[in-house]
Amino acid sequence: MDWFATGDYTLAREILQRGIAAIFLIAFVSAHNQFPALLGDTGLLPVRRFTAVVPFRRAPSLFHWRYSDRMLRALTWAGSTLAATVVLGLAQLGPAWLPMLVFLLLFAGYLSIVNVGQTFYSFGWESLLVEAGFIVAFLGSNAVATPLPVLLFLRWLVFRLEFGAGLIKLRGGREWRDLTALFYHHETQPMPNPVSWFVHHLPRWFHRGEVLANHAVQLGLPLLLFAPQPVASIAAGLIVLSQLWLVVTGNFAWLNWITIVLAFAAVDDASFRWLGGLILPGLRAAPPGGSTVPGEQPLWFVVVVLAVVVLLLVLSYWPARNLFRRRQLMNASFNPFHLVNAYGAFGTVTKERFEVIVEGGASADPQDATAWRAYEFRGKPGDPARLPGQFAPYHLRLDWLMWFLALGSRDTAWFEAFLARLLQADPATLRLLAHDPFAGQPPRFVRARVFRYRFSTPAERRAEQVWWVRTEVGTLVPPVTLPPE
Image (tube, rainbow, N blue to C red; front, side, top):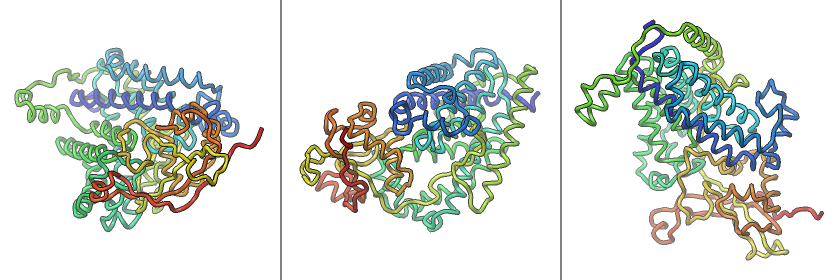
């Protein structure tokens, strides 16, 4: 059975299972905290309206049967608990079917959330988590050796993720081809973090080097994931390092962290021992403790794994074809179960940053300029004096959609509902924000203005103590109020 199972990837399996489970844990906690306000019974885009017009076959979800906020919270608690059992290594102590069952339940539970999440769950890393959760379900437990076909398919997932993103950039904006993309990206990315200001002000030759390194990693290394060892491990290690740089310089929810976890599918135990030997020389000669020696695998396990891999290979036709299409799709699913998707991000980089600032007015006269106060969001820029925060791998969904809104997104139904909730001082909506200037009381009016933002220069930072400099460019929504009852 050496062709099917191996004892050389024991640590990789531990990282894959525990890492994906940890991201599921974060995703379910995020849903518990945000889903009811965004999509619940009184949310901005209620699930019940969605399921009334979209059939189950197009968006399979438990919530087609019934939705309530209580049911949603029960699902998130159950998902968090199941994910925690894998993070702690408990599920892996049982028979091979136990982690399989746990991950399939996580997959089904989170798929139920994603498929009714509408624009708030339309991000590529949602499909990525669903797909990864399904695949790692078939890695087995400590009772069996690690199945090689599953590891190879996980490498194919990383290949699609990285190579697809690289092709999107080459086919996208000219800034990726003339190496100027990162002159702007650190400033205009959806949600800068505390390091972004400092990296933005590094020399331009450094930013050109960033783009070159990005092209090398995304277009050159993915193929090497299928090379013999230690080449595959080296390629995976370089991908991990590139993702860690993205972690340090931005807030991209769990996209970078899940890519890091998945890359370990190409790292064998010998590479871990070599790395351990560099850190602690005494570990270099240590035996591969805990490795499972390939032997007789349960027949049912072999049959199930091979059947699943064949299914995934068949489903791979559509994303593989997409890689070679002139009009390559970015972050696309080809089936309602979000299995074997197309990935990619930032085919073009915006060169100017616009922000929508939402304000409430306390005066009966909307022309009274002194009565307007701004609502502050948790992650998106607002107050120029506030240092951008670090939130990833947690996903601030409302803040991300505010970025798309400022870019001119035509999907504004949620924003209109958001303004109405502010006028009602809806507690659930206000909890999504960092600061309510009216302390829970409803304003008389709300409005939305658009500003051009740029990072302050070092001189401006020293003189004015601001991280951003902004200039008003227009009004998105003039003062509005609730109609009289």
